[in-house]
Image 1: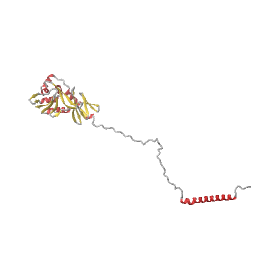
Image 2: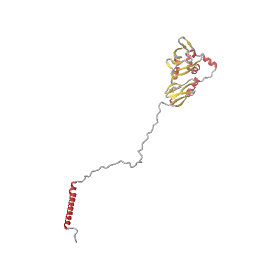
Image 3: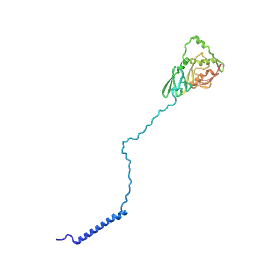
Image 4: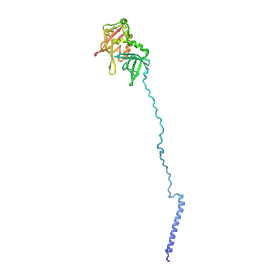
Length: 282
């Protein structure tokens, strides 16, 4: 029988395998001892930093509670209607005038004039109506003043003989040329009987825009002391004794002091002319 492999070939193969195994064994020893000690050809392990991501695990979590700002009520300055006391009223078809007290001082107001921010709108015999910020306020006349005002405004029925007697208790106006002489009893009478003024003379406010610039005389009754003063219908009273009559307060301030004057100087506008009337009080 013929051999498949020759002995020479077998020896060569065995030799090659032995060499290969020897080399492999040698490399294994070197790798496990010498290379491990000196860390040759080994990749140095690098420390890596961990990556952190902020992840909201509870997306439906309610936000931290917030405290709503509490709105405090706004304090309205300018005073109250209760600070005003109504002391007196004069009211007719032409004029409405009231006397009020505010902070222990009195003031005379005409329609459209104001005090403490409240504007006088109208009045009756026992109350006045004021307006402020589109609101309406009503002030009643103080009870202990009602009777006093009633006496000065409402006519009192007395006997005709008594009226005739009173009619002759005051003096008259005398023409002295450049000026006129007024009997003091006339001033005293009209100071105490306000209603008699409006029976004998009519006045109406005169305005330029919103400003009051004087009072126009609408009529003067014949045969009365006012007719003797030299004033005429349509005259505009501009000032009295140097006091500009540009408000009801100014007019009534003069009226309240009329008993004490020694002389009267009246500046009027007649047509397009301005003139001054002089009076001496005896």
